[in-house]
Image 1 (spheres, protein in one colour):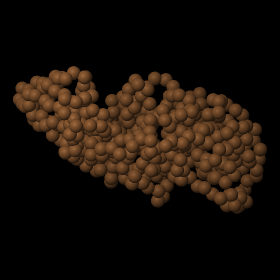
Image 2 (spheres, rainbow, N blue to C red):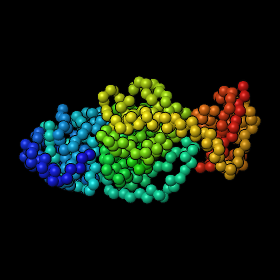
Image 3 (tube, rainbow, N blue to C red):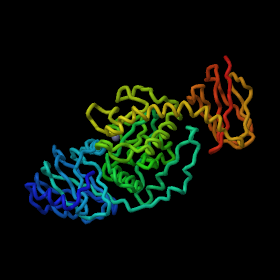
Image 4 (tube, helix red, strand yellow):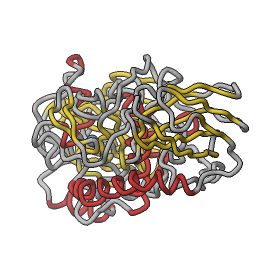
Length: 441
Ligand SMILES: [Zn+2]
């Protein structure tokens, strides 16, 4: 995102063969104060001044409706912020699936530092009808310190701290449709291809929500999670009580979303010398570690995706689509996935069980018998507990069970082969780990 001072913009205009022109603007659709789509006709190499959509907006995208290229086109917001138009495959996907839309491609989302109700536009190579999607997300301040940042970093079965959709979506329209569940085998890493300078991350997430739901027409935001440059994790697509948020089928990978969970890192890493921050990568790694642990997946494994071929349990967006289809997650993030994220997650998965055992909570009292067990054991609780997980010696989860309030509960081990296991009994943050031997049946 280039921010060119007004003086430079004027100089650029002075040397280009352009003339300022008024253009008739038509409203295509509107949803209250949140969304408005307008269109107007453009000729190439023409500067259009002060286009007035009569709508207070915080962000916009451009679409072309013919086989146009966005090359050399740019928009000026508030007179001083210049954005060179660049195609974003995430949005173009959505439009090309919608035949009625008749759109060929969409730009990235351009977020304004201030609300705007007019913009100027240079058409570059574009000729014909241009559609502009205007989003308005009212400002929202979240006190991120209300929830404790402290958590057991060594226990990868605890989901990292995140901001629930009900918090960051306040004041915006509800998601639509019914969430669909998918059994996740691949965690797909994206970048937003958006601003590298905006630090109001809640504002960024809210504008993507409006882009995805209002302009793209999706039921909910496309990703399962979004991670900000400061490491803040935002819950994305909402399971709405029908399924868990990390298992909701999203909209983020070239219509091949089944068996995937999408995590979007805010920012654009296809820009020279812009790299993901250490803090943001650590949040991504903790989120991925938690999910892989939960699903019993390994960081370096691959498996067959129904339509994308062999795909890593951790993969970049581009890995799941046809070659050359998308730059996402940007070269500078893509390299980090292989150089850093996968090894780190692998290491965190290997370490989480032994460290977790050492730091078990003394307040949690539970015993199991018989031990060694053959086809079952009884769990006797002397304090409250709500769930139980059994891990094999490599730290891979092999059984998960909800617990009732019964004092003694019978757990079947008939599906477990002979060997050493760890039984973890949880009550919210507290847990106890018990070594279990399963004997030959
Ligand atoms: Zn992507």
